[in-house]
Length: 471
Ligand code: PA5
Image (cartoon, rainbow, N blue to C red; front, side, top):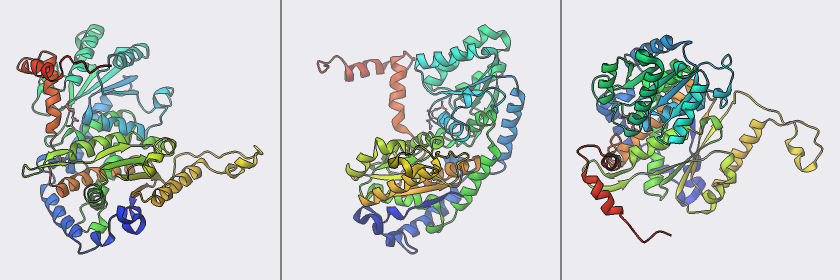
């Protein structure tokens, strides 16, 4: 199972830049706070915006697995390409699962070597990018052999709606009245614009359950359908998430990984001046999981007001980095720049493959590499960087993952989701809303001419109008 080594976050290692161990010991205020927050989370789990806690457990799990597997079975053998259309919480989890659990070369593999269709997750409206993926689908199998997985809880998100309108039109022209067989929509089971479209056009649909917000939805059909289509073991993923959830339901701080992660990061981020949180996997496969983490940590905790409405400007800036790559790009800053960061490294104990560096080059300066495994070099580089961070009094921790497989990725997802719930309570903010995202969405509607939002045309131009400050 995943473990977190947090010794380097403590003052015993990094002096005044670390947390005093007495502050997290049994009987401390932090330990008491976790006890009461755990009791509170036990009461709220499965209700309101905390329905995501129940995703890895029956009856939700059973229901979702049955629906997802039926949709995968119905699509089996019919498609060469799967294109996910979604954004934010309706795309980042899909990208993370695919990159963590299938080879980086997946889309380039021959069909017999792949466990499913090629996968593209288009989470933007960059027209050149969008068009190039559609071109490739046309060339590789054609639109008839391309399945579009439209994911939108609301159906109102401009980016996803625009993408959907384009592919619906293309499919209709290419396939005629049966175009709907090339669409699987994941949306609210009862309401919303996408739901209305699905009912009208009779698409296959899968649910984004009530009370499961975008950034907490990866373990629902939002993430599960594309993963299962590409051969990822979604049963193991949910089993890993459930196992971590059980560990993180423990009221004892020292035995609850999510509570400890949240306690340390909130303490370091607020009292000790480290509001920047770097997640640095030493594993390419996990790099895009850091994008998923960035949304979860940023959108959940970045809040102007606390639960009583007082301005607090809470939140931490999540940053992603890759070891060892970013040792040659970012570590100079991390060690000698402002001491305002917590460095979170991810270490994989057993890689699925290893490479031996050959002997026989005969150059003294490189002799030390001969006969060694590449995984040993990676591990040494990580350990050395950890040592260097401690040497410059930079708080850091290591998430240790025995191997990168569906079970451990499920554990990792659950760990961060529950840590986010604890951090929300510790900061006394609502971790489940995103009020600041609204203004930009509404101004976009205004600029694009949506009825009811016309006022934004004058407001935007008034605020950003012609200026001489351009060089
Ligand atoms: O976390 C969130 O709530 C957002 O990132 C949403 O997932 C994103 O805006 C997409 O929303 P929707 O699924 O309604 O299209």
